[in-house]
Image (tube, rainbow, N blue to C red; front, side, top):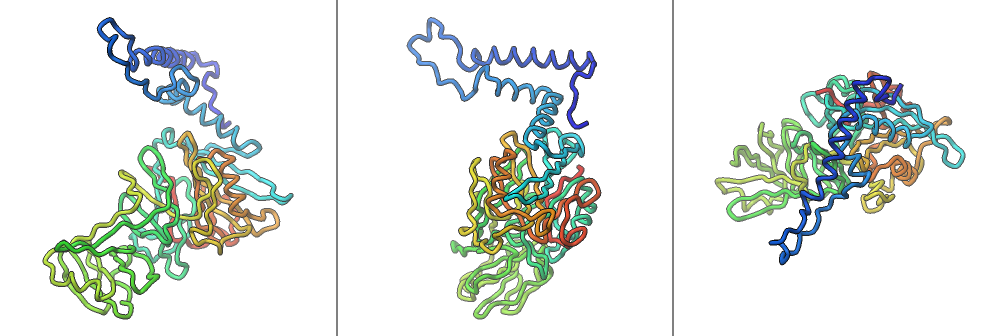
Length: 421
């Protein structure tokens, strides 16, 4: 049974909840006095400060405080919320705070089979949500099945992640894991930032530069395929041991410990803990004789304290409204009805992972607009599309739960996993 019965004839639980209710009620009564004290005689000439943005005495505040005080109440609310939002779906509890939902929707009279995993990280304290590379050595040139990735990361659930270059497995778009930038954005596509206590969604731009002697050179990307010969790119050991070939009229410098240790028009070895910068020779020439150089890698928005970033595109839901910017993100090629992968988060800060089967008689797939509508319908305030089509695959508790065209799913570059701590 999926819903926790708080009482179940247990007087100890009943007493515990009653105590929590009494504490919360007392706090709500006292809050107006704490933040907006009564005017005393000596205060008559002083205007009282505006009341802070608390909704005193309302049901929302009451429930929020109860959830913070009582894990049992939060669990009950999570169970009820999932049951309401996925009406008609088959709901299974994977572990505390983690649900797997199977549901079938009909669009134009045709079926679409959908698998969803929703996690309340406050309840699922024994798990961590994070992107994971297919390679255990963190080499970007790698592809493995989602089952292998999940087992390597000791994960209870996983879904395929960013777009990637099929020939090599290199992720295409922003990917940060544990504060380390593995790859930078392409076309400033939308990404999700994962924090210790929540999420954020935005189109991400590269904000990186090479700095020395008062000179600055913009770095256009990190560990990504070259799009223009005029770009300046940085490569780390995550790319491999050697930088890619230099473009015509280009040059390379290898940097370690803020020193240029080698320079050539030929591909250089990438130093461990350092970078190789590849750029037009005229752009790098002013830096070649500098004693100290610095590489600064960041993004815009900066997202201070972000732990992980995973990219996709296009937007699906933005500020609780359907928003599909397929043209702006140069993703018109992925239109039509297809298997789809998406992630989003709800007003109550739950993370939702979605896999939609498609291109089959029993499940025809979704357009991006239909997917956006579904993500909004299940309560997502912000949501983004991830790599789909043949890549769409979801793993739950030891097995692939959707029906990808290739049994078990194709080998992929990376995944978003719910891993045991």
